[in-house]
Length: 480
Image (tube, rainbow, N blue to C red; front, side):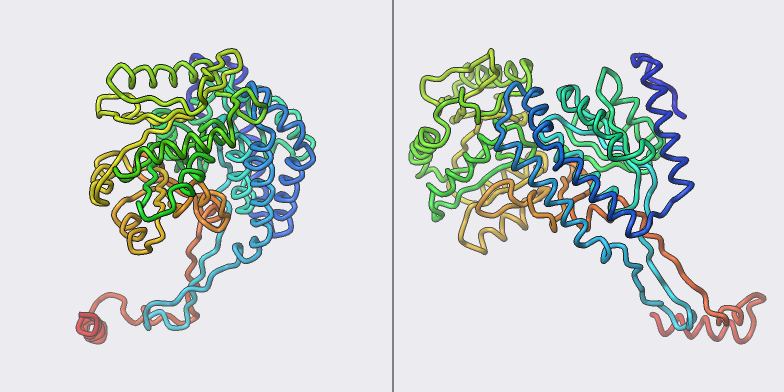
């Protein structure tokens, strides 16, 4: 066991280590669940969500202050249960032992196999913005691969954390799955446990701390971070369609999505038209921030951060447009209007930091190369969103701008595809999950060579004389 965090109550530290030890012992007792057991675990995981959907959505809304029921249904309940169904559908195929080619005639009669096996005990650290999706989708991959799991929830998800802790025992023994509430200092202690894999979703700063803690045990990590994801609108693409799709995701969850559009490149000839269309979209689809379907900002600190970002932009000469008209920030309910921010400069905060809220920076360009140069001069983003019907232009952006994932002619939607891996690159993260790639991430692909009854290598043992020398010389000539 690792040393405990001095800021963490001893009882909580002991509880974490006790749960880990129980799961480790259970894994060693039964290290490789069969197909039927894994399928049953996935079905139980789905039932835990579907049978408690109303309570889950209520708890999430309580944690937010107000979370749109429709957004919770789509992003938490539907997406998760559908993702688990996809795992169940493909599980038998994923678990199959793979036959591999035997590479050399010297191993004639031998066989190669790759056997997917569980890693063991896995840890998952969950953020507050999509707490069910970002816990149960990794859990689906973990259980499909035959693992056990411990899940540490966010300090901003207290109501949900306590609900899941109460519910979990009805569906799974603690040796299989356990949830933990963040009470202060739990996260770093959790990261220090000698997991066989640790998955973290959150900020880059916290991700670095998690990775450093995990490194003490050489625990491999999957980091899903964030960054400033750009959208690029080709002037030949229908502008109203692009505006509608971008603003739909920008208002979804009040913009609090790691893969959201952080800024948009608009051709310089279309800037004013973009602004007019954005105003029209908001007036039609989300004119009242006090409506129950307009999600709150998660906490007062985040509201202040967004206000400070806007004020910094104003003070330094940016054009700030409130798309919600006369509605100002509702600090009591933490409701924040949609804003466009134009005429920005490099020293502004909005240029440097991920906004993670309903602020959309608008940049203009003349030529596509300007876009490529700008994005590539900054950290690699978690997502890229080119809007164009020109396949060659879309391919150019995809080839020249590296990002975690891409949706062409929309935003976010690649994350909803169960058969596509989800993950970042560089400062936006490392590793993948979802679908088959999730199964692989949570598995050890064991390479196994089965030697034949007779081995040709027996004839090539030292001392190396005559026959062995001729064979080795022949092989060198043949392979050169």
